[in-house]
Image (cartoon, rainbow, N blue to C red):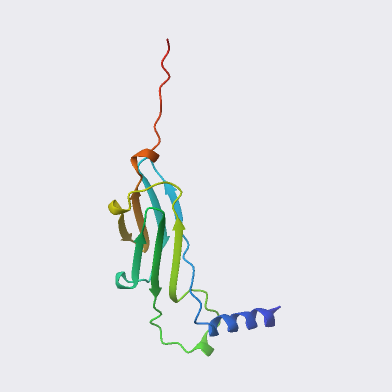
Length: 127
């Protein structure tokens, strides 16, 4: 089994053309759709966020500044290179009012929901 894993690892190390995926959490509160993504090691200059009324796209690049030759790695599980993630928004949003922030390596994007998609609780009238 070790030889098979070694072969797979070597192939992965040699393939620099593939773009990486970005893990995200997406949820809603009463007023916003919120996306969170861990992007530690990505500088602001290497990050691009585009938002339409239907899709959020996050593109970036994580640069490996270590000067280590490939043959000296035992394992390389951290992804270095370009990545992209698009997420189709499940509700209508106001893309023009979206905000993004970065804190402790976590990117947070808040996109206000359109008024028509906010949850409204109705009280039942008696009589």
